[in-house]
Image (cartoon, rainbow, N blue to C red):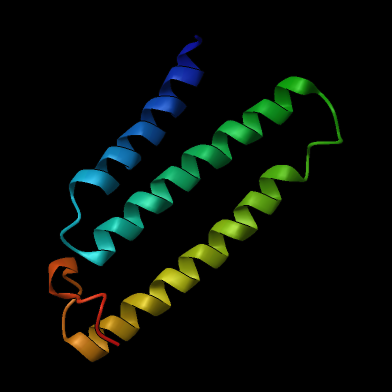
Length: 98
């Protein structure tokens, strides 16, 4: 495993463990998701550069577009929950309540 592959897999794993273990605030969960998406974007970009093919050159841009959509949806949910519940703490949310 090259150092670049190790760095990106470690960044993805760090984001995943942050998402799994530090679920106190919705903002921290969204930041962990963004870190995971960023590591996937950089890894996919380097993979397409290593292949020297123009066929896969649009894949990082598509991933970046989906990441932007995910970030805007997450920010909208954060604003909506902060307005309705008054906080972004995940323990205060009741998923069974509408």
